[in-house]
Length: 614
Image (tube, rainbow, N blue to C red):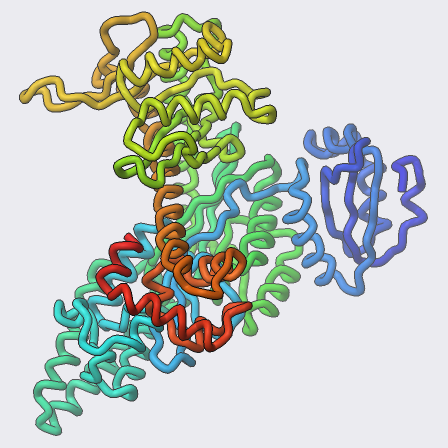
């Protein structure tokens, strides 16, 4: 409907409304208990509305409404539409990527812990999300050290004939070597789950009871196993901080605004112990209660684990409705509470302090990067500080599987839409400068990419690589239009160690970045990201080529079937370890063809398979 139409015509029913601009793009999504009353409020009190609402109405040209059966349905639909359209005037989480979690499926014959990025409703147990890859790997390391669950994949476990290295190092129970019964292994899995759930008191009582029973039965070796496991759990708990005497699972949300941005700090408390924290930045400014409500709706609606209780700093609009919705998602009662005193109040303040620290650090890093960009402007004599930076890198081993990467930064932040990767076509022998030249020619002659030139081009290398780059730019007619620099790490003497050097065109001596720490940090990040991107592509191509070359020897495996096998198994080791049934489940692969594939891979020997898949 047009904004000129009267809202009186809207139904007095729950639903969702969407404001659109002149182009039809959704700029705001809201929900209402009564669509008529809610939409009318935008126009009757327009002069008294917040600056954000006034700005939104100034751009709005149309309005669409969707009627729902209940207010709870409207809440769910609102969250889905915000995720889909990411409207400019809604509060939207800036960082919505999936974070690492731990998964274990107790229904498996021999469960193991695995790292995952998505939590599915598949009956398995998930623990997380964790604040960082380091945090989840540290947790996994502790669990493996204490409980020693199997770590090898299913296919490797089924074909193993003797204990793995983890068993020999005391990091695995040796299930594959039948050193522990499936029943006993199941009890260890239950203990690991109790530990991950934070139910450490139950776990300690259980281990202590098992130890005493084994000792009473004169099974002293078994009693020693429980004694060591109990000691390891208690040692781990000493490193964790108890922050609540209620022993509940809680998420604590604190908020902080510095006038330029708004961030939410979240503490994850399990069984009364602080197990992790994260900070989320908000893309759109708004009132603090609105930001917290939007966070709860978007974060938990995306599948994040829901605790028994959520502590917030201020009362939320429709708090009861949110709690009811979360309870439906979790399958048990969830409370949203504003603590007034005691542990809860202290925890909310701690979460808000984390958010404030994050914003301060972000502003400091932004100022640091701004200073580095201005320094580049001075060094190169540019009319303005460069904003779009690009870096090129090459990855190969003796010229084989050579690839090139190009990454782009806008200021100090990666701009993933500008990332490109290239398979080197012209050479199959080691010649990094020539490979770099090929990548540059393709980058700046591609009709689509050539429309956008960076403000600064950086290559990984010294004066030789920079001169090669300048020669290519001259050949392409970009000389004088595109500044270029080279970054190299070279030895500068035994006492001085090594230092980053920045090579500039037309300048004999490089700039030693040890004297330019802000500039060094920025350029190191740019170069390291290009290197990471190139290495990742090289490894992928190498694995696929190794698998492809072996499959080419199998009669009946053509390009389509080869691609299907590559997609399914990814590496020669995984395919070689797979059973006939697993291979034959790939589309187009019969059981007879699966046998031929196994025979071909077995004929090359295990050592050959490992070398090919490196």
